[in-house]
Length: 357
Image 1 (cartoon, rainbow, N blue to C red):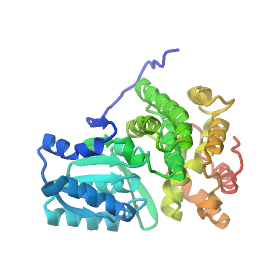
Image 2 (spheres, one colour; image 1 turned 90 degrees about the vertical axis):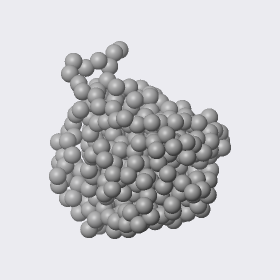
Image 3 (cartoon, rainbow, N blue to C red; image 1 turned 135 degrees about the vertical axis):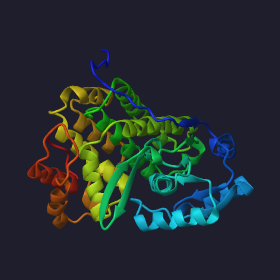
Image 4 (cartoon, one colour; image 1 turned 30 degrees about the vertical axis):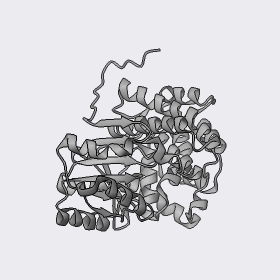
């Protein structure tokens, strides 16, 4: 059956993407192609050694390393990194890491227009988007602008080969959430739907193989392929309830990003599955399930993903406030956002129960 729609618009960002084991060694080549010569390397504190390795490999083309990237892209850290980039005379940033580091690179680009080369070490997928989420004053907000769209992405399976299995699983489910919500996005197109379904298939097939053999470069490459596709969907269409809930829980309650996405995904999709039955039917089919929410829950269980918000540090006493925040300025969603229903969803997600409509 064709995915044709009578009316649609598709905007695909200009971006260079390279896949392959060892692709991380191409940073200098990509800098030369863009006429760049002074890179500031970005990492989290945990990946500072990796940043130093990139700086050593680039030699005189690296002007420094900033290893302060943090989850949810706090504005004070972004401002400190921007100040360092300006002080060092950087003409680009090289973000090596997951969503936290990619977000920091985008935040610097927002303030300076510096080109970005991203070398992902997780499956976050945010490197494929022109979306920046920032946290300030206990609230996470997002903006979409071409200014934060990275110019180059280098996907290197060798860099994710040692990513712990638990982080691999949560990062993968985070990426799958972009594709799942893209299936019913208000501004979806046949192109975004094709990418969403192919991205989900890539994780369905590749993730179990990665769990069985974490150093399988072919499986790691397939999951990176899935991350790119799902991330491109995120950058192409609008997101809905799932992402609003995760932004609320992350920005206001400081829950870990990927783990929160993993827990919330089956519940948010189950909430919308009647209102978007036709759009979500292919998701259930890919997962071999009778319903998309149940299929995602069963997949998460098989992959050993976290299932409960309480295990991530969420207090049951905070669920009322979370539901209240989540219904403020809601994103477009196929089903109306009702506070009582959202509170019920959050209770199930907190307890680790199977999702219900």
